[in-house]
Amino acid sequence: MKLRAFKQVDVFTDTPYLGNPLAVVLDGSGLSTEDMQHFACWTNLSETTFLLPPTPEAAAAGADYQVRIFTTAYEMPFAGHPTLGSCHAWLEAGGQPKHPEFIVQQCPVGLVRIRHSAKPIAFAAPALTRRQPTPDTLADLTAALGLSPAQLLAAQHLNNGPSHFGMLINSGEALQLLAPDPTALRAAMLAADISGIGLAVIDAPESNSGLIKRSNREARAFAGHSGASAEAAQLSVRFFFNTGVTVLEDPVTGSFNASLAQWLMAEGLAPTRYTATQGTCLGRMGQVHLSRDAGGQVWVGGDSVTCIDGTVRL
Image: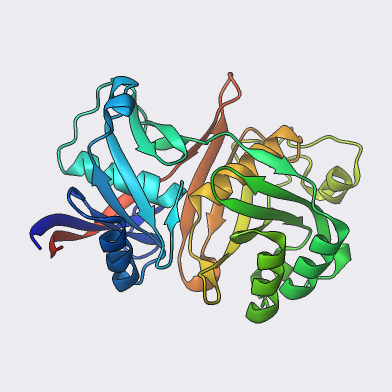
């Protein structure tokens, strides 16, 4: 064992203890996968990351560092709040990007660009694959969440590394009062081969202009919001994930918000710029800033703040 630089960072907030915490070991060299997993289990946070030099191939492609991301039970190919939090920790520890505009992170899903030329920093959402759910999957998940079919507006399987499931529902009150059955929800998630399920409600002021105009049932459901501007538009989000033992709620989820934005923007169900709030039911106030540039790339941004700074014996 040796002393290694360590930070605990709160992500998607500029105020300590109102976002999603992340443990970051700034030097993961010499640690085995088993060592990393054991420590991640010990921290008991939703994710723990380990920073490493990029592989020679990734370095040649522009990578600044490599990150490995662990939940308490398994390694993840990609995750959003660990990406932003690890980048924040790397920069704070003196990391020097090769590129004047982007930091390039290597992780199992590939090379992820992080835009640091503007604040807050934002990562480029990885490529998304999505598909319609089967009626049985939809029925099982809806029942386990305690929703009625009439409350559901749209749903998709969403995969950008993690395999998630997204639901758009019609009631902010239903979202806030949601009380899933953990046993039934875990069983439904396992049957559908998904690691997490997120729900969203569009909540946009009516006094501005130009949000959604579509002649389908989703757009008609948002008729009351159809006057909102992209700048004012906001989504409320909740996300539940399978820990390997039970299902818990995540305070703020970057990877899900990334795939959600790609889906909703592609379908014309959300504007190309909005802010998602998440974590209010857990006493948090996460803010995720989503935007799509002229080339079609979706960017996921958020503030981070360091809460613990020191060393860990590993």
